[in-house]
Amino acid sequence: MTLVFAGACSHAPGITGRADRADPTQRKNLLNNLERMRQEIKDSGAEALVIVAAEHFANFFMNNMPAYCVGMADYYEGPIEDEEWLAIKKTRIPGNPDLSERLIKTILNDVDVAYAQEWKFDHGISVPLNFLTPDYDLDIIPVNINCQGPPLTPLNRAYEFGRALRKACDAVPEKIAIVGTGGISHWPCTPDSGKINEEFDREFLDHFLANDKAGMLSFSDEETYERGGQGGFEIRTFVAIAGACEGAKGDLWCYEPIPIYAVGCTVASMEVL
Amino acid sequence: MSLYYVQKLIYELNRDPLTRQRFDDDKESVLAEYDLSEEELTAIRQPDIGLLYVLGVNGQILMHYAALWKMPWDDYIQAMKDGLEEHGPVRAGLYARTGGGAV
Image (cartoon, rainbow over all chains, first blue to last red; front, side):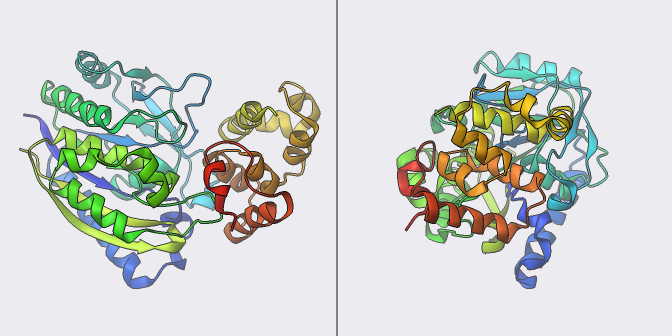
């Protein structure tokens, strides 16, 4: 067993780009728990971080949109966003193509995953890395689940992808951490930005933390869209983490609905059995 | 209506510094490479964030485009509200189902 850490966190660009416009107490709680995650990943001895993201048209487009993709490059670049707007400097992020290839080969037994030997990150990966590996000194394996451009992969497939990812992690000798990043309810990039449905978020999180597969998979895209906005489609990243940790329970470290960040800011871990 | 190509052009501008440089140097030659209507051309040239939103450009693509033009956050949100006021509900894409925030 070489999966050594599993968790999930938010990635909203406001967390860095509009940092000081949040309630200071809420922000402090969020930052404290992102720091806790950074420390726990470090303490786990992880030699690579697999980040399961929901990227936003930085790398993939509707001309050839993979439902699932894993990076297999020496290095990655990002963020694509304006540096001042996101308040994160553009940089190169180290990859590990040999490890990527071994993970991909195992995943392919269960899921027809795509791979990419170049990949530009956006806030979906760059914001979490800004807190979790601020010195960019840990190999990153980016994973994307298309959560932005419908038609989208069904939730049950996201769960199965997580299971396949777990098998792959456990088949390599390296110690691996995995983190899913996405929002629960949110209406980003619309005039409704800032709207958060805390009831929906807590309902989903209860299922996630209990690793209640049936409960998580009970949310149809229609229901998610109505109650959680189009940003809610990103629950696929959480579902994948739950699949990777099937049978284990989660622990909610932080949930802070912060309207100026446009999302209920979440930090959680999932036990690795 | 060629929403796909509007989005593709903005996607390339957002992620590729060379495309952006070509756009800055000779906007019209870049625009000519895409199958765009007059309304779409106008919206991209200005850029008119509100109209692009109403045309149905995916918000994740549009947000990065507003950032590319260094549009302050509050102005960007207001531009989408103004777009709905001026042009009516979102016409296509992911946000058309609920009017994209229109009340």
